[in-house]
Length: 75
Image 1 (tube, rainbow, N blue to C red):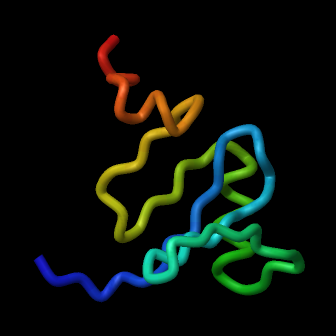
Image 2 (cartoon, rainbow, N blue to C red; image 1 turned 180 degrees about the vertical axis):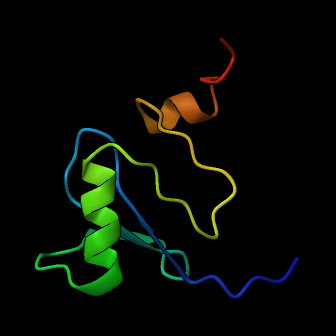
């Protein structure tokens, strides 16, 4: 499968900030405020409790990297 996705912006419940995952370089960095435009609007909705998803079809929060391969979704 060929993909053109190079970055993913995400937020984690309980953290008001947003993060940028660069899939090409394998890095994750915090997006520094001020946010503007549609990104700022989406983040405001997210912080008010909404779930905003576009172009991502699987995302799960885990307690640690080790738990990802250890069956953290088993129950």
